[in-house]
Length: 173
Image (cartoon, rainbow, N blue to C red; front, side):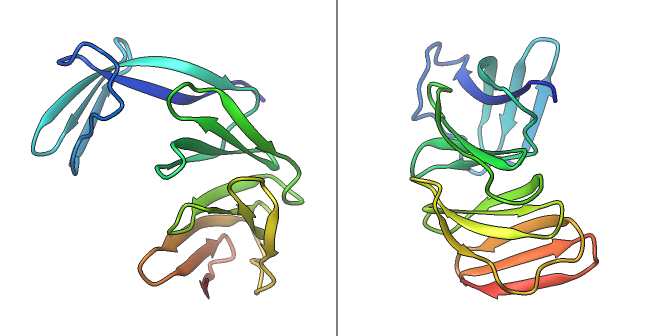
């Protein structure tokens, strides 16, 4: 497996300094110039960012999500979940051997205290964001084939999964 870029810091050009409080309220489009590392985010306002790589993962990363409560980036890497500090790019935690096969999808619950992962054999599990402990093995019907997506519906506290077996499953959290 090759190395993959995982955490990026965006520095607004118009401000000229790193400012983590800058937000692009409700962006409607994003454009990236790979040659210059410039990203333009548009909504009601237009923001221009320079791209600087802060860290790299040691193994292939299949999916990442941002946890705005803990200010970290959570990534699925093989059978593990890794947690990086969103500001420094430093690896904070690595939770290994969570599932029997490669983790393909990852999401967070409404309070951003739990991560939910699904693997290439249709298995799923729920883990604690702070220590990686399995909170419960999802013992509902597992998918017969790889998980293709996991969605957590915050307002209804529902977990929706789909698999290559062409099945959609809905679980109450």
